[in-house]
Amino acid sequence: MKTVRNVLLVIADQWRGDSIACWGHPDVKTPHLDAFATEAMSFRRHHAQAAPCGPSRASLLTGRYLMNHRQVSNETPLPASISTLGHLVAQSGREPVLFGYTDTPNDPDDATQTQPWVCPGFATRTGFFYHDGFAAWRDWLVDHGVTLELDDDPESIFLPKGGYDPAHSDAPCQYPADLSDTAFMFGSARDYIAEQGEAPWFVNLNCLRPHPPMVAPAPYNRMFDPASLSGPARIESPDALAQSHPFLAASLRAYGAKRYFRDELTPDQVSDAQDRAMRAAYYGNMAEVDAQFGALVADLKVRGLYDETLIIFTSDHADQLGDNWIYGRRGPFPSLFHVPLMIRDPRHPDSYGTDTDAFTETIDILPTIAEAAGQAVPECDGRSLMAFLQGSEPTHWRDFTVWETDFRELHLNAELRTFLPERVEDCCFTALMSRDWLYIHFPAQPALLYDLRVDPHCHYNLAEKPEHAGDLARAAQALLTHRIRHAPKQLSDYWLTYATEGQAQKIWNTGGETC
Image (cartoon, rainbow, N blue to C red; front, side, top):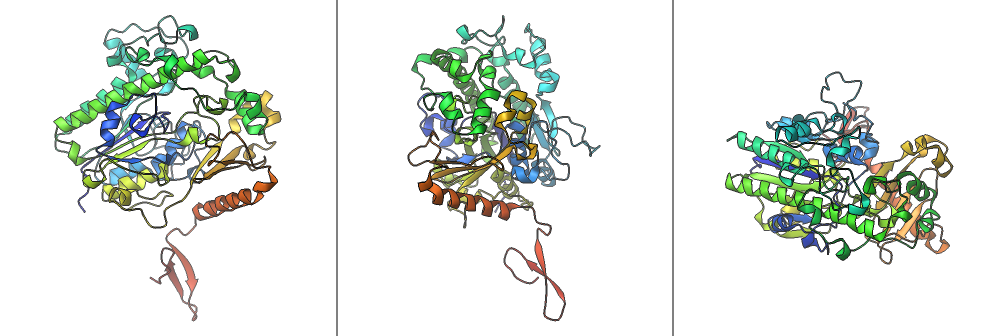
């Protein structure tokens, strides 16, 4: 089959998988993604494999579970020995160009890595980095005559002039929408594509939004009426959640709601009005990303590139957004790991406007791009989604999804130590979600178990209920089997065995045939 000419991979930041209008969300406005969905395939049950940003993006860019790539936090380097999507793209003859960031610290053992916080293998065209105060965009704003009010916090660049006031959270950013960080990143990508002429290209475009701070530029700051928005899904109080498990108690104490309301608020101190206003800003930032994505798609059509380009829209992970009383990118629940995925492959028009509810994972994106670009799929944990685009489900497809989180940084907070395992290596969990059950395993703490058929928002932990002992055991066995299957193997391509006369033979592990 003919390979695709160009690849556009758009990764939003903290975009919830339920927040697409045409997928049924009651509040968001995403007309351009809705239109794109009619010309693409929607993967409605798509999940990230880790949180926060760095570990999740490492899974996307390596095709590996966290347990195998080992970038367990935003501050942990990705081992230089691991092959990435950037390396794969370079092998296909395209330059792996990055717009934005990947939250990948350099491996200190690799002197060849000269781009701080950029995944190995990628070439940065336009960077967008927290550590330098978003210098490229900041300088661009100044060049366009914007007078900025900044302090020592790099995020102050996003806040309204005069600072953020929770009582007036619809105040706009201190820059107009046409000069926003979202406009800057998408505009830079459009300029680059225009420069390529007839040459094939690969663009990895990362935009920060709808990531906090929860402030939107005009007119997106007042696009949504806070009073009309639906609220979070949660039980009666944070205390009720905290009593169900020590990790949940620790999460509530550690993360609170400061980043969302710019104040030292505990979740139960957030008023209904504040929560709704925060959501209005979150949805406003989504609407702006949607508009910029639509402009990029329109530009590809004008340039005659739309039907020559594999286009993927997704997010690194989602956001609890107050569900289960947790704000942000911490917690073990599906709200944080369910992310959007739309893929348009111009070679498969029969997939346009279709969708699937099969479980797909962030780690599947790398092998999908490899197959589309005519490259051999490298060793990884993911599987190509190309069969779905061709109208069929791959054989032996997964019937559950798995995600992981390492929370050892909570040990930095002395107040939380009574809630956490004694040994730092036990500060982690792995979750397995089927269509009916969510099982969350902790090495040194009790498990969590939720029946999604009657409790889709994970309010009532059943792990300690005797009548669910069998369900707990089956889920634990499924997770153990999954980890054994995906553990790194010393001989990844074949097993060694011996024939009856003592001659060593190579036996391919894919089919058991002697080679």
